Image 1 (cartoon, rainbow, N blue to C red):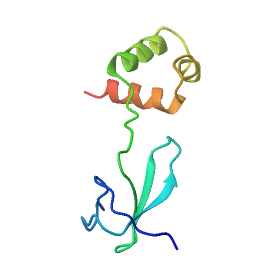
Image 2: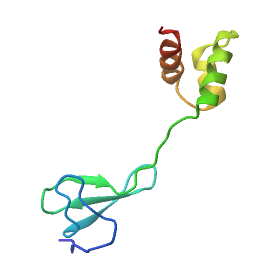
Image 3: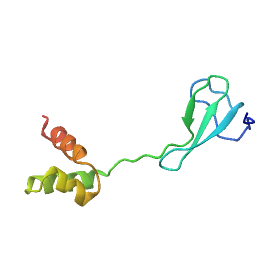
Image 4: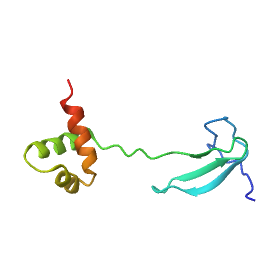
Length: 94
């Protein structure tokens, strides 16, 4: 059984306690995961925001309207075609 350690900044988002927090490895982006032994919830301490800037979104939409496919735009900019289609739908709404 892992020993619970009190580290500053590690607070359970559900119960708010700082004691009885255990390290539980890392998520895909490399951020530390923790588990609260009191309420049994797993959480990330400081999750990374993976938001794509608005300028890149607008450039992707322009590239799509210039004749490239959604899949092609996704490959060029490095994200999925689903993102491109969602941005186009969102852009077309009044």
